[in-house]
Length: 200
Image 1 (cartoon, rainbow, N blue to C red):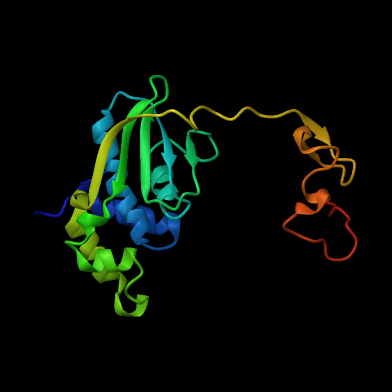
Image 2: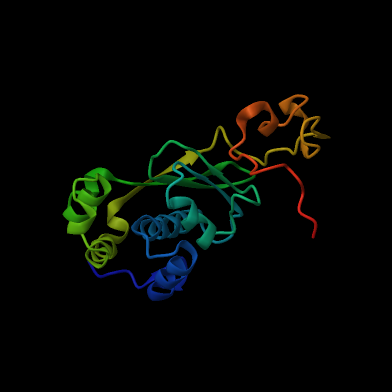
């Protein structure tokens, strides 16, 4: 099977360069994601305004953000922490679309790809160029897809009522209580020295 020369309407080399600029390197997961987005977009057709659901936090959201209008920030992409290498593009009005996933049975035809995904080969024994060659050779043949109707996780999340935290004085969603989550002890940081805002 010849290697696909375009992905997501762009030349393959341009796609790889875009991935490297955005992600920091030609991450195999983002490259596979580009094939997945390409297939899902073809299934959907050009005239559909699509939203996305991604079933892993690893690499695949970057492919969605690079090759569709859907981003985490604009609310058109939902990211589920299921750690399954799958995505769905769907019509935001009809809620019908296509789910595409990395098909483990199909990756067995490409031992480097299978061993990488299943973490059976140490990174040192599988150089990036060798792995990318396997991914490009596999192309869409490593994927499966099916039509779906989206029943959950669709639509934009509504912004919640905003208040001022009694602890830190910062704006936060009132649904968290009288204190923001950080002041309730759920913060991811601690201040070094006294908490004093920097003057600009």
